[in-house]
Image (cartoon, rainbow, N blue to C red):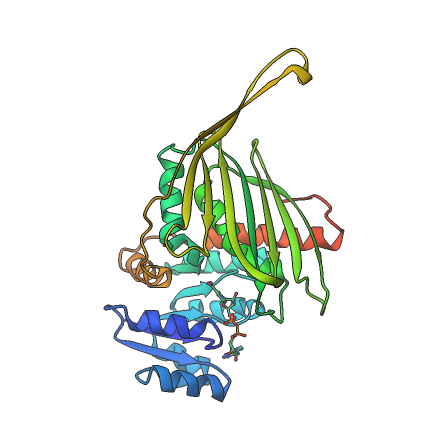
Length: 331
Ligand SMILES: NC(=O)c1ccc[n+]([C@@H]2O[C@H](COP(=O)([O-])OP(=O)(O)OC[C@H]3O[C@@H](n4cnc5c(N)ncnc54)[C@H](O)[C@@H]3O)[C@@H](O)[C@H]2O)c1
């Protein structure tokens, strides 16, 4: 298999390295418009064949990974599908849900696979949380409460929700495949240019579950922490920890129902905490392997275009909400 990587900025070099390390990939091509990025890849990964011409790269490869700014994903993806190539598209999948639907239909017609890079789904920590959610250990998930802040790289074409929240939203969708998000509310502020750099996003579901995400490119400290409240146990996922990324707390609250609300008895259960072992294999390497295996087995990849569309729908609704200072927008 020959793989082409389009966009060799911040993220593209990670794709080059991980596709080069796949045994099924015999050649890796790279494409960017900037000489400085091509020179950087030439010095770090000399076996990569480099070009500034996307059309030329497309002619030579079987699969393409698109790691350019979000607004450009659709056109590059469509062009690749029309030339019969399987595609890997960086998160967020597309700039609108309409674009996502068009790509899904095109890929279906041509029996091509679309992998959307929801990288976190391939991390050991998220796979362990999935195991705990699926085997019933944490019970029904009642809420997600997440903080993803640091002095981050500003993206030029999207706000901080489009940039950072796809990670959290994809984790949420993966752990809660049967809960349907029905509405969102988002607030935020753009302190430096037209796109918000601090934002809060709430997601409402069709059942008694709620999620809140706080994202910020301008925080002096880096925090990557998610609390997942189950009615049996609760998980704290701290991605800044090297070893104990996940802590499972056997804690909760029982409320005994009384006639009068002020008589209700709140009982706290504070039990043991344990930190399960999580696999440390690089997520992108597992993602690249899943993409190639899904193509060989002619099946949808674990993180596919339908998941990408679900995330884009929430992002679109958030964009609408933020313009109206937190108005509830139905999905
Ligand atoms: N999965 C993840 O964890 C993760 C992390 C970071 C970024 N990303 C995603 O990767 C994508 C790129 O982000 P980035 O931070 O690397 O951006 P970036 O701006 O650093 O890099 C984008 C590159 O694309 C190139 N480019 C733009 N238009 C081009 C064209 N027409 N032809 C060839 N090259 C072109 C630019 O020259 C630049 O080098 C975004 O969708 C972003 O959301 C994903």
